[in-house]
Length: 261
Image (cartoon, rainbow, N blue to C red; front, side):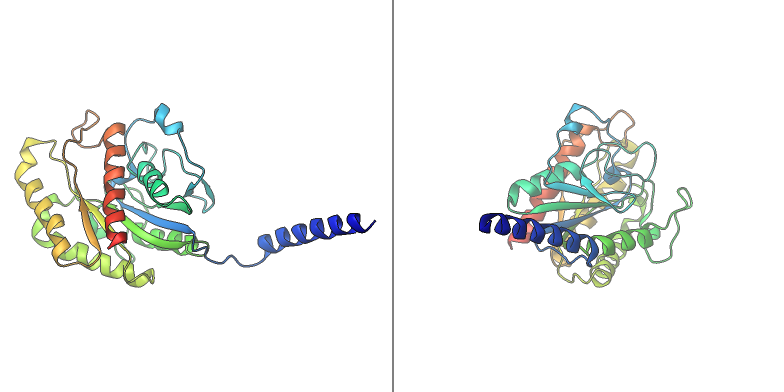
């Protein structure tokens, strides 16, 4: 009888614990590492979903459009119906590999076609009728209830490559604003270069890349991921699935470097 009583006590304790975890307010788990994914279409992903997309990792989670968590799988984003393979999932897998004792939480917030001008408070993207910055804040604040923000990756500029003279100032301001709003003053930020798939934009792309590379000298905890050797999917604009995954791993390597400093 005594052993039965002990078993009942254990079962009761487990059931009570389960109820409490469902009804009490969530608290951030230091072992749930959050990463914000922002920018435009090449961050959202336009590569074709393929067999590799089914190769998921249960330790890599994604925040869905409905603000629920599930195992991350392509497409991560939902900005447009054409969303496909981007760098996010490969990035998350590499981060999980680097930190085997934690879970990775990806927060997809990129919106295809957006200029950096709409990545600010109150700004609306006319094409999608969304507010990229405001919508992103809501999603990150929701995620921060259960995890800790460890990094931000940004791929944007196709809409702004001709504005390289002011882009550095704009991106620096955005980074400062994000770190303030998200209460993460030292969070690592990794931007990405632009690929030059169109010879007509070779000069402007070169100037743009010099700006995003050079920001490492003026912005703390900042790095820039290379796009050397990556290929488009046939439209001279968006990365194919293989290249998107390579880029994701490069983002991760830069993120790990920043975190190890």
